[in-house]
Amino acid sequence: MSDEDSSVLATIKDAVGLVPEPVQNTFFKALSRLLGGAMSIPAAKFKQFTQGIDDTTTARSTLSLALAKAASDKVINDPLVVQAAVEVLLPDAIQKLTNRARVAEQAAEYLTQIDATSASNEQGSAPDVDWMNSFIRFAEDASSERLQDLFGRILAGEAARPGAFGLATLRAVSELDQSIANDFLYAWSQSVGDAIDYSTEWQRGEGFMRWKRLSEAGLLAIQDSVQYLPPYREFGQKYSLWSPMQVGPTYITVYFEKGCSAQWHQIDFTRIGRELGALLDKPDYAKNMRQAALRLPVPGILRIDLNTASTPSEVIWQEHN
Image (cartoon, rainbow, N blue to C red; front, side):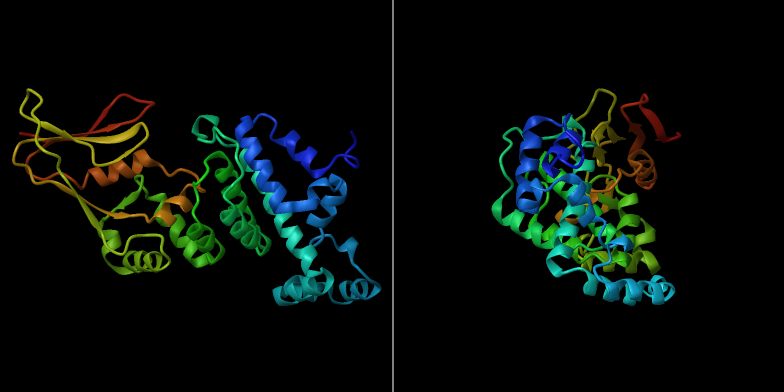
C-alpha cells in the first residue's frame, strides 16, 4: 500500500504495532473521537493539513502569495503578524483539525516509548466520554508545539493507564504559561517522589516566591507537611528503621535509637502536580534523596543508607562516637 493510498489509521497502526493490544485498542478509540472522519483520509493528504501553517507553498490565494512576498521579512520577525496571517489563511475548522492532528502524531510517538510493564490497561475500553470531550476541546486549541507535545503525552499516558490524568490536569496544562512551566520544571527536578525537601532554599527569597507561584497554580501544596518516625521496633542492636523517602527501588533507610525525635519536612506535589510530573523525564531521585537525607541527622540517628537497584546500599551518613 502506497503512502498516498494508506489512511491515517493504517499509518498510525504501523507506528504502534508493538504496543500491547489493550493499549492500542484504547488509543485508537480515543483517536477516532479526536480525529473523526479524518482517520480515513489518505496519510499523504492528511500531512498537508498538519503542515499547513508552516508550508508557504500552500498559500490559499494570489493575495496570500503577494502578502508573503511583499512582507516576508516583517512576518518572520513579528509574531503578531504571523498569527494574523494564520487566522486569515486557515479557516477555523482547518486550524483546529491541524492542532488535533499534531497532538495525535505526538501521542503515537510517545505511546511507543511507554514501558509495557508500567501499563495498567487490561480492558482496551474507550476513554471516559466526559474526559475525552474535554480533551478534544483543549487539544484543538493547542496551537503551540509545547502544548501539542504535552497533550500528546497525556493521551498516550491515558491509553496506557486509564484514569492517570484528571480533568483538572487537562485544564491546568491548557493554562500553563512558560513562566510557571519553568518554575515547575525546576521544582520537579528536585523531586524525591511525591514531594520535595523543605530545605532553606524554599523558605526565603526567590525559592519561597517560586513555591507560592506554584501553589497558586495548584501544583504544590500551600504549606509544608511533616513525616515523623514510625513506632520504635528494635532490631536486636538497639535501633529501629525508618524510610521517609522512596520511589520504586530507590529509597532512604534511617537507623535510629529509642527516644529519637527526628522528622522530615516536605512540600507535597498536588494531584495535578504529580500528574504533570508524570509527563516529564524522571529527576535524579538518588541525588535528591541524598541531599535531603543529609539534613536529617539529629541526636539519636545512628546511620543513613541510600538504596538503589543498580548498586549495593551506600552509607551516606554515620554517627561517630
